[in-house]
Length: 404
Image (cartoon, rainbow, N blue to C red):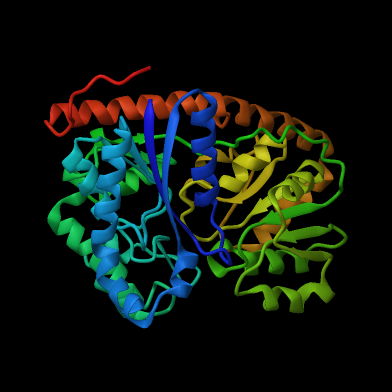
């Protein structure tokens, strides 16, 4: 197949698992013999924008005419069989869908956040879950609370994007299939009016396979952004209740200084951001991975990466995490925002080595059953076929024979 993959990278200072997922899926499709045509933008570009370009971003986020023209040109040149969109915010915009639709190319949109129903894309506010906007149908709750980047202006831009394309019917008219990363995400989309038959579920994959480790390092591990919604404050409070269990923190973020202030009172080591190979090395030696998120994680890519390393996960019982981390099977669940519960689960894991060894085995099984490149390649091709069928049924897909 000829697959057109489109992605808007996040800022280099705030890397996202969505960036990794885009690169992984493109690579595994190419390994399977498919031709992947990439179109990417990067939020680092914004730093070099002129004053006028930055001023124009508010309406370009809603409709980027330059994207429409570029996508049209690329389609004419490469004639893809399907267009697979990852993140389109803020530089690509939904105009790209319409360029594909005008050319008769089926459109698939990966859903790894809640950008189509929530202005900040997280269903979270001030580090806690919030569903005011999708529950009430009014996006201006987000504007009032400045949910996106603590700015009412920037939140208004995000809310306008959602509102305009909701009224245009973009999600129904221009997208043929949504790929949700979990059943939780699919339920949230359906609750907001997205048609059930246009949503499939495919988890993220881990490619290449990092291979399992031995877990003999004697420490717990956290990998992620140091922010409120990721539960870092709950994690530190839990470690103040524990004695003698080392914790390694990988990542950076706005709460980094808060974490650094607590280090002298705990057995916590702050390592900062590390390259993927170094993170996998730590995962292979860790006893457990802690994922204390307090927002509705759409999936929790770091948990799948841990499973690939045969590393059990202690995760908050929230969002997609509650699906992929099975309590007392491949990890443990705890009540989000509850440091006492988290501390108790960590202590139990370190006090029960035989149970932890069984969880390590089940963690690796979870990877082999759900998150391998082979399984994800098949799921992607099935999704593309469904998108094409939806487009043909509605008379939106051009008919032409593609070379094998």
